Amino acid sequence: MLLALRQWLDPVAIAAIAFLALSVFCHVAGNAIGTRLREIGDQPDAAPSEASLARLRPRPQDFAPATQLGQRHSLGWTIVIATSVGISSGAIGGGLWTFLASRGQIGLLNIAVGVVAFAVLGGIAAFATVGFVQVLVAAIWQALKSPDAKPEKMLS
Image (cartoon, rainbow, N blue to C red; front, side, top):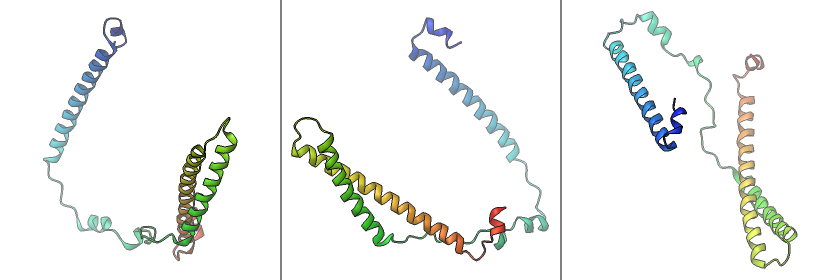
């Protein structure tokens, strides 16, 4: 029906009509859901028995062992060295690429911009890669050395 109105109305008007129809539909649906929930909420629940409460109470074996992943740890000198290598290799690569890929006269400013841009990109890439790998290796190492982790339980 809305597509048939395209002959006589502007697309903005059709979009406004569709938005109005959708708003009315959502309002009616929300009203119906709210009324139903209010009816359900007015009825008191039956008192739970002690046996059902005991079943719902969590036991220590219901939870996984606590991990160290939520704790903050320094990434150490490895991240500093990797970021420095990423910055320097990005700067060298960016300068060379700018020099070799440019046609015609190349100014020193153009090469400097290429060096700085690729140094930043290289540093960010090295930092992100080494940081993610360090956290991933730490998580795998912790999962493998956990005393509760048994290979047959991990496979099932």
